Amino acid sequence: MLTIKNYINGELIEPIAKSYIDNYNPATGAVYSLIPDSDERDVQLAVTAATAAFPSWSITPKNERSAILIRIVQLIEKNLEKLAIAESIDNGKPVWLAKMVDIPRAASNFHFYATAILHDATETHTMENTAINYTVRQPIGVAGCISPWNLPLYLFTWKIAPAIASGNCVVAKPSEITPMTAFLLSEICIEAGLPKGVLNIVHGYGHKVGSAITAHPHIPIISFTGGTKTGAEIARVAAPMFKKLSLELGGKNPNIIFADCDFDKMLKTTINSSFSNQGEICLCGSRIFIERSIYEKFKTEFVAQTKKLKVGNPADDTNRLGAIVSKQHMEKILSYIELSKQEGGSILCGGKQALIAGEFEKGWYIEPTIIEGLAYDCRTNQEEIFGPVVTLTPFDTEEEVLKMANSTIYGLAATVWTENLTKAHRVANDLHSGIVWVNCWLLRDLRTPFGGVKSSGVGREGGFEALHFFTEPKNVCIKL
Ligand code: NAD
Image 1: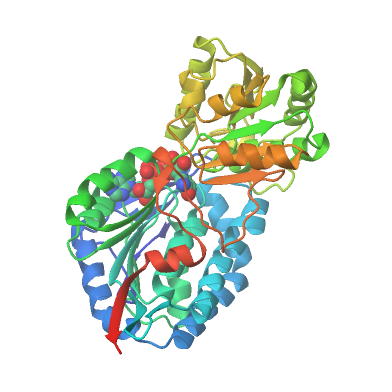
Image 2 (image 1 turned 120 degrees about the horizontal axis):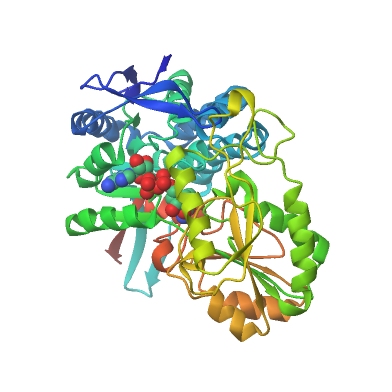
């Protein structure tokens, strides 16, 4: 059985306690590898290595840092197939999806920041005949990067790439539920010649490794993606230490469909925005609001299309949905489906565990589920489910749909479908959301600010926002 190792000071090493956590393949429900059950001692080793590497890495010329990151990109691309299969086995997502989205995006993350640092510029502010100010942006030191299980390598690299590109050293922790591609990335970093200590990856539980990173006095900056509750705990510990924080948290995103939309395009994309990656994307539109005049037509066609989606073996390219990441998460999703019934909802399709015969009978699968008849403010419509479950709610007016869309504690992403440009601008303006997609979904330009409002997070990733987050601006004022 494959045993994952920590990557500390350029080497792959065992956790100090020599204890391990079982790593499950969600498609079969079987343990297939072992993950280091690291603790604060391993985090300390990583911080020591990162601290030692920082003086040299932070002054390494940008083009040299960039060249090393580009070698990482090339190795990710060379290993695309292997990484995609590993991601699928670890997470349950279809191999085709990992090949098409997760792994190419991990390469793009490194590529984007490897080149962005070459084009970055800082500001000057002149005071006529008096003084000139210039801003320098300096790397901060050792950055803590903590990521979730839903897009494992994609989100892990989304933090690490800007952190190291801008001259920081990193202590990173992938989710203990999906650590495999982070481990494979550590092998790639060694092969790419990343200097020792620049990136350190410590595997293990959140309450041990994650909290040791959060509380460490020599990690002044933390980039976290995960659940809102965990984000609140990190903020509670880090705020009194005045750490710089970027928190990318949960969502309960509205998908607003006006009667004047391009129906066919909307339907096709709504299938994706509802059920891609088994609905385990923080940006999925789990609350679908449909203008009443097309409600019945939408419902009939959406249910018919959804019933055609095949669920099963993630390695079979004909399956649209793979397995749910863990047994515990599958049970959570199923409990929300039960709750929706108690709250008066009707299940239009799905609504239960999908049982797949043979090798996969012990795997964790859920049929794509559509629910209608719920109040917009019931728990099913307010709490994040994070699975292949969507609700349908009709609306009559813009005012009404905005009230319902903005009613949750979250504000990560929203989707709007209309061919009326004025309406699109108006609704986008009034949505309480960090991201609004009009007539599309998950269309990403890595230069744009990414993040949420309200309980969906604090701060923005992407583009120069991330390079600014991972550096500290200093103003130098020179009197003329
Ligand atoms: P989670 O909060 O349980 O875990 C995320 C990471 O935090 C894991 O690595 C975990 O080990 C670690 N962790 C847990 N407890 C910790 C603690 N006390 N201190 C420090 N670290 C700790 O989230 P999850 O279940 O892995 O991921 C699902 C959640 O992530 C969903 O809520 C989803 O919406 C959110 N998410 C948000 C975004 C975004 O960009 N906003 C993207 C993806 C996922």
